[in-house]
Image (cartoon, rainbow, N blue to C red; front, side, top):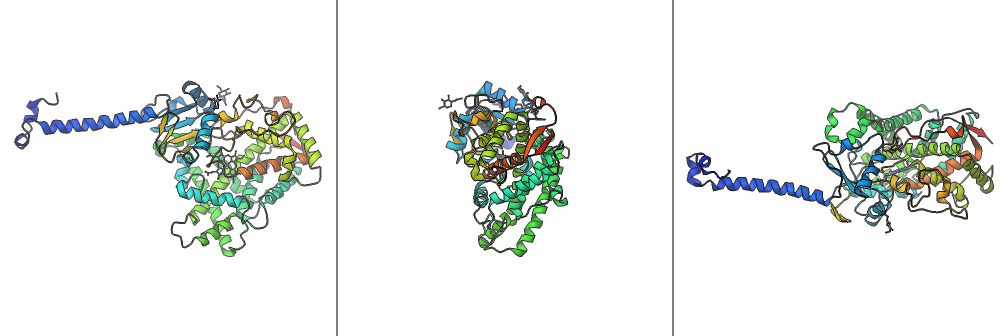
Length: 511
Ligand code: HEM
Ligand SMILES: *[C@@H]1O[C@H](CO)[C@@H](O)[C@H](O)[C@H]1NC(C)=O
Ligand SMILES: *[C@@H]1O[C@H](CO)[C@@H](O)[C@H](O)[C@H]1NC(C)=O
């Protein structure tokens, strides 16, 4: 049909003169068709080399196949059908899902240098613009992460250690809980203040009173962000960013709140700049400002005001609600299991006694409490889907080829709920982390903070807070349920990107 000479000759005299048989046109058409098929074939080929998965629809991918109210259930069903590594399309973007310990370890640890890049999270990328630490990439991420880890390990933050800051906050927390006079109390607010204050203490060196107006406002902003993030519109924004211009304003509130937190941090930074003594830094901001001075002649330095502000926002956003949700989950689990509470208190009495302030080195003598804290984190499964990763180069992974930039979901809940590693994965049982002799039993499957080079930057801090807060609370109070402990429900309101515990009341009865 294409080579039919009659219409081609009819094109006009100059054409005919150059190419009497229409070969040029034919060749051109063939060329275009050839390129078109090559590109299609290429795409299909690339897709063939990606892991298998459900067939995507044009534009929206597999979105309709996901149950946003119960993503973990959807991800497990897909793993049963396609195996431990499969591909989903969020819109037109392929996402490779890793389901289970073996593939997760193979990617994040064995191939850790390739799988350490951060994947796209549009709702945050649009705000952070690649600054800070949680959503930054490449060299910037490496520099700020290394610096932050050092600082959080007490290098150069003055005389007061991180542990002392947490201990001080634990005592303030107890004072605040005493004011409830053993009456039924919803612990959400008080347990939110403590981790938030720890971050304040690290960033700005001072803590706030639990009724300070500025502090309350800051907490309100953070809370609202987490509430809004669990709304379907936010998931929509993340999964189908191409349509974000048409979405209602939820994300605008999130941006406004983040902007306000950033401004709050900027004010603090300005105060710090006025009195900075680079030889004697007292907190994270001092350390960062000193680093900025050291590198002021380096035009490629990553240590600038924008990165400082954004890293501050990151530490607040990543370090407050996570820890406080885990505390709330923990107290609820202890309420539901009075025998666990009795054993914890026996161990505290034996090792610490009623008068001394608990410290982190008590942990090695307290295998039961250590196991309870691990089990609370395993069971509460705070970040079931992890935070998206990406590969920073083309890589052959098992029998597949993942092109540079492919988004990876290294899921955490299948590892934490593995039935070979944990005898009763769906049950809360501290024995999961104890051996026959009652000694603490470590597990490689314990990865609530993820694992590898991109794992939680605050892991050390969070584990210190959880141990010290739980121990200090139970040293001072007995937890009493308001109703029948058997009727306490663990059901979360939603299972999206974070598992938030249900709200409840309890009594803190002083010893
Ligand atoms: C129980 C408490 C916490 C849990 C369960 C938790 C969990 C996580 C998880 C799952 C990630 C993603 C890791 C990955 O991408 O592989 C993460 C990242 C991160 N967390 Fe935490 N976290 C907690 C507390 C904290 C605290 C207290 C801080 C504050 C210092 C913090 C700061 C961060 C930062 C900055 C990142 C990003 C790391 C990076 O991209 O390099 N987290 N966390
Ligand atoms: C999610 O689905 C699983 C399995 O179908 C079910 O057991 C669980 O109760 C569901 N969770 C929620 C919050 O609906
Ligand atoms: C994981 O790897 C181990 C050791 O190679 C193997 O024994 C086990 O069957 C694997 N588990 C799964 C679920 O593939």
